[in-house]
Amino acid sequence: MRLETKLGLFNGLSKLLLVLLGALLIPPIVQRVAVGHTDQRLLDKKVELLHLIERDGLATFLRAEHDESYADYNILK
Image (cartoon, rainbow, N blue to C red; front, side, top):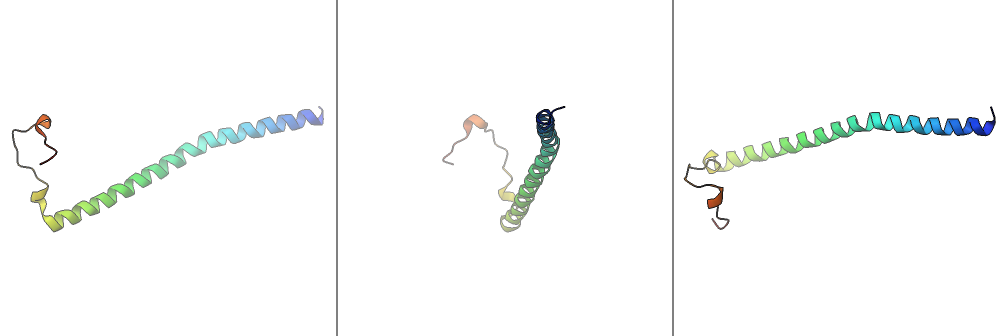
């Protein structure tokens, strides 16, 4: 087999190996980072909400039941 053929095969196979490794390794890493980021944001929101409840009380977050629907919503309230 000629050297040119060997180098071409090596080049093609190495590129194929890199693409396969990337396809197998990148999605789990991205998934882990995305889930970690979402978890951190949710924990921050939880701490913020608990702080607001401690400061203002739970009554500010509970709405009295009215006969209102989404169509009755007024942005100027």
